[in-house]
Length: 129
Image (cartoon, rainbow, N blue to C red; front, side):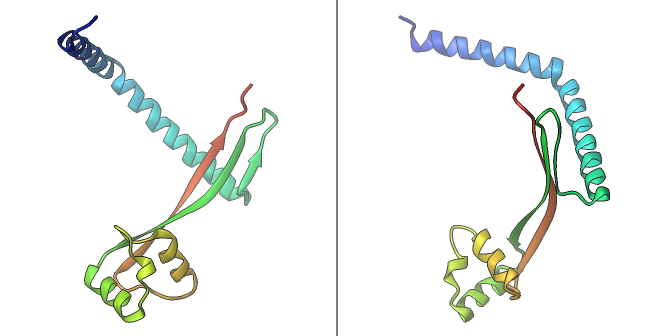
């Protein structure tokens, strides 16, 4: 039976191997990830130019361009005063409720101290061939 010390030593060996792999392949991986980002942007641009939000391909792959929106509190005092004045405690959780805040904004109401971010994203699904 292995002792805790033996297991710890093995864990250290694995972490050393992990660091060696990161050193050896980290730059290559970052370069591939950067190229993937550029190609994703090009694909999104091509779909936008063609006026497409969804596309399916012969190999079963699917591409969807969608908008991801989030809100963040920029001015806490203005935000909390708004919550108190309007009794919209549904906006409060440990942090601002994304769903409730976006619903309020979609209903044409500004929330003081809150800024909405809107970011277009790309979802790609490959066939499992």
